[in-house]
Length: 261
Image 1 (cartoon, one colour):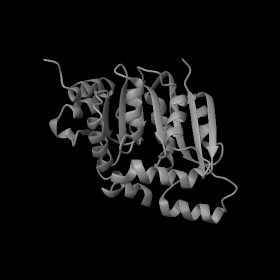
Image 2 (cartoon, one colour):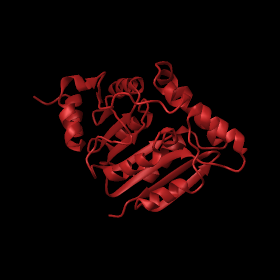
Image 3 (cartoon, one colour):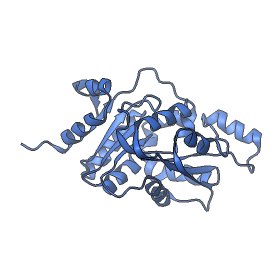
Image 4 (cartoon, one colour):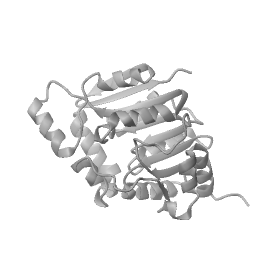
């Protein structure tokens, strides 16, 4: 008997997981609402923005209303829309089909599902997030679209449950600035990428047009970190990425790079 799509996806995920995570994934109670729960207990929110992602209300409106509106506020009226963001991510990641992709801080999987369609049956997408409500929404949407090459995992961005060099691409859009340890997360992204692996990031950037006190106030209330102009590109170069590129729109930067073969 042919395995059900969910079982095939779980089998493909097991090939990417670390030994400890794979052992946990084999336990029946590790799977909740269709996603694999590997998150450590007692993870604290970094601020108001991250706390909202844990509610039931935000996941329900995230893809259609929340994320586009919030992005527009920070990218500016002339900034790229969601379709253009996807195109930027696809270009940085070099997606053409067959890639293994980690969509880090995937939310309800709006990018994860698109990556799954682009990479096709030979590709595979892991959407990882800390929010149970976001992941449950992502599972439901992926099932509704009949996607069999995608799986969702609840985990820690600074302790990814994947083997070294297990994926070809890592995307982390609109989340790095919310992590408690963003550079620890970058270390982990670098670790799980194989030779020639590509990375795509969308995160904050400090601009001279924002008064310093206002920037600090917004950062304190939301929990959002504002990165200096060259902080992220330098961090990627320090971790061995080459061909590092950046595009800035408003208070947002899109950054990509690849590892040598």
